[in-house]
Length: 64
Image 1 (cartoon, rainbow, N blue to C red):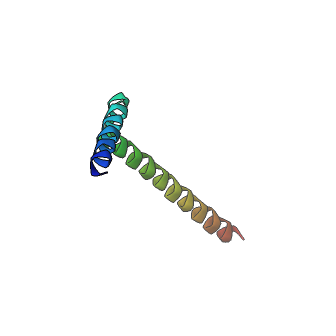
Image 2 (tube, rainbow, N blue to C red):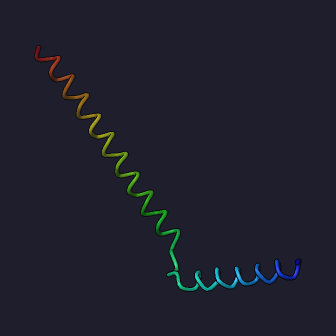
């Protein structure tokens, strides 16, 4: 029974290695840097929009 389990595990490892060899290599660092850049740009855009909305509301109070 133990031999059958070990054999099945070796077969599964072989299948997984075969699948892994078919996948294209990924550049994880470049992916992470691109994701961080997008998040930073979205955060800066959100802060700019909040700043504009505060300036607009302050300006409308001054004219009332």
